[in-house]
Amino acid sequence: MGEPLDVESDAIIPYPLLEDHDAYRTFCLKRAAARKGYDVTDLAWYSTETLAELVEAVLGAFTPTPQGDGRGNNDPAEGWNVQAALADVQRALYKLMSPEHRAVLMLHHSGYLEASDESLQAAYTDLQGCLGGRRPKGLLDRS
Image 1 (cartoon, rainbow, N blue to C red):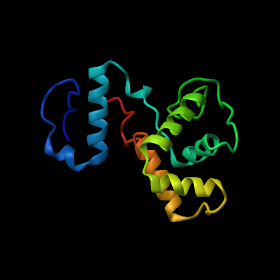
Image 2: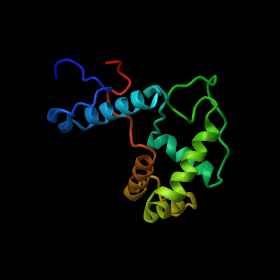
Image 3: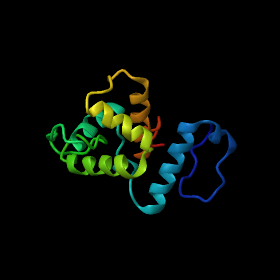
Image 4: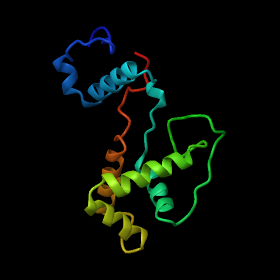
């Protein structure tokens, strides 16, 4: 696309960037980080697999233990950020996601729904969306 866009400028976002969802989200997240004074590496991204484990913990099935050495790696369920991850998931589960998807997660937790069920995958995708969605491709590139 030529030279990189200046995320600190107030220039209008070029139309070709709007057609590439990941590039658009990356640009907007970098612009917000630059304006608010944080780094995009400070953001956390939850995979649906990680969310499945955290939902079980929030609903009381087990207590996760921290993994790794406590250094950040953009997976909030690793390192020593487990309590923050649990708080994120609990807030999203009870305040942000749709009641239908929340019910699906609770049915699965209670053993009434198989892990391969499409509605369960949709519920985890909804929960992931409530927590910022998946990490856009190219977000952690330094361009």
